Image 1 (spheres, rainbow, N blue to C red):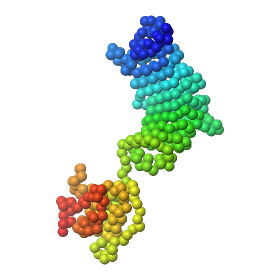
Image 2: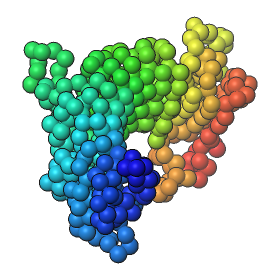
Image 3: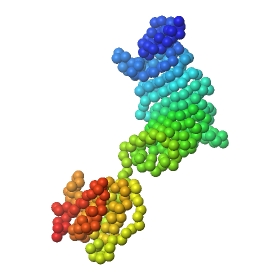
Image 4: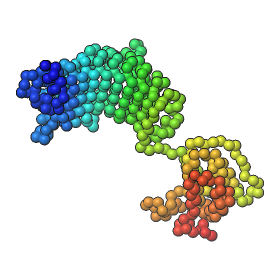
Length: 394
């Protein structure tokens, strides 16, 4: 009968179950063995109790009435309303051998809480399978034994200042910031999520079964990576990084998710301020053929101060022939800013050399270049500004 009551009580919403424990010894006994504690503002706070102080008091009463025995899942999402003493006390009350999932998110703009690694006693280390820490400091010591049952680890904006070294001679010496080490003792670890780790530089993993990894921030991977199957990365210019770095270190990757706020395009920009070489129209010899070399990544080409110089025409033709991924080509007969740009009263001032050369540059483009531009590329020719460079019409 007691097992039936416990089962029924475990299906009741947490707030109602906590209230029932105050009016019945039978429910109190069931509450003290409730396996799943999901504690946050949504599950606990009523409309009549909106202040952080009341929420903390309510949470304190609930956890002190629970024995910690039988807890399988503990989630504390605290919205920065608890002080360090409260957190330490609550964790001591609710985290006991047999726990399988611990989620601690004392959300704050600043990392203020130091997660007590001493909490992870041998009994807890042997049972915990999922660990999520956020907005706190995590300082493992050599005395912290391996979490052999851990299968999932999520670190969200967690400050890590020292790591246990796999080398006994280095025990007690913190490693350099930004190079966390995942030891081979984590035999069951298959999933790792690192969020907000913008200062991390390298993650070295010796975990033999780590196959699912999610990272926020540009972090290099080293160690045992052949078993990696699924990877998610979020940082600027991640596509370029993934293309150049990942094929060699993650040969067995099956799923790749990339999120980027920006990508540095593959651009060639050439600027010249005056005519320096012989014109293509003054040299009767044919255009030179430069040795072929495929530019697989080049997508955008812009040449400012384009002239009829034969060497420049030859270079442009060579690029158009060998840039197989070309998306846009812009040939500007001037260089610098233009009056059409925001907050510009006039175009960039320059001597008469380039503007006077512009008509021949346009003729060179029509004669030698236009028909060589790939059909898939956007082609733009920018003539001199007729308001700022009247000499170009002479």
